[in-house]
Length: 133
Image (cartoon, rainbow, N blue to C red; front, side, top):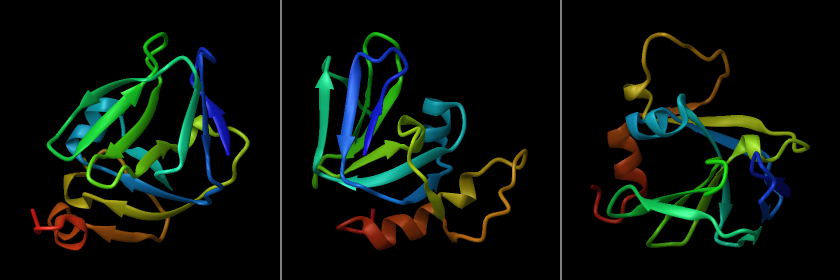
């Protein structure tokens, strides 16, 4: 898959993916203005052209963006190097919404009709965090 930031300074290249996971956590909503539509791309992701800037948003993750236009480019798990990329970067790719996480933090002003797996924040940490926290 190939995508780019809004100004075109950074091209993102990642393995083909078809599923999107949605994150409703407060941090993702503050960062993006709504839930993050995340494509899980593993650790094999390349950024060509300008180098992304990064902000360490927690003990376990950083968020990347284009320093020229501010486009959100990635959420990366530091322990594994796994990238979650915003689906909007890939304008020519077809995706299917498969899951929603931090459903307990979703505000009441929107509701999605998609039938997906839904996990609370606690369930996410129990399933994916090495020490359950």
